[in-house]
Length: 249
Ligand SMILES: CC(=O)N[C@H](C=O)[C@@H](O)[C@H](O)[C@H](O)COP(=O)(O)O
Image (cartoon, rainbow, N blue to C red; front, side):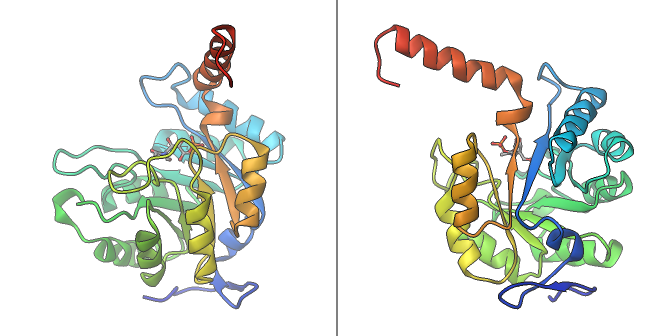
């Protein structure tokens, strides 16, 4: 399946969706808090998004139609929308079906992020069918494929998605389980030269961001290290207590 609408030709000759092209070399902040997190709530996430935009974020990544709608009202930068939902017959939870895509697009998202792993989808739906349905129902909305492996990223590119992100590396049982970002995956996918690649997942430092760009990332997405204060504090406390107990850091 090829991209059906106007695009911008980028270095290497790939046609890129204009919204995605506009994020080149951008720093994207993921502003998400689940119901069990201290900062849960659309007002809180919108404040995070405004702060991120103030700091120069090129785009915001946001979960739930409620958060997306409020962030769209308060920010000017593009919003990458997703909707985490759990179905009993599947482990796929990032915008798993056309219903959540519909909710995300109607809430005003500029890009929709969907799980594009090879895990079984709700109702045993096929990824190619879901993508075809999104193209038909929402031809203007670029699709961001969240993947966990090289094979999944390459397959998503063949299906004509607008951007591939390494979001789910480490979160499927068969992908590398590592504490650091999967920069090798960024490099391998970017080397295909077939679609822009976002680096996402467990990025905590500016040095890691720069390494992702060097590896060929079109943009870098950081969430927890900026918008989950409980995890930021935990990192300080853990490191300090290790030091106090005499462990090397
Ligand atoms: C695996 C999964 O569900 N990732 C989610 C995807 O939207 C978010 O919870 C992450 O915060 C986001 O990907 C950014 O990553 P990090 O928070 O590691 O910078």
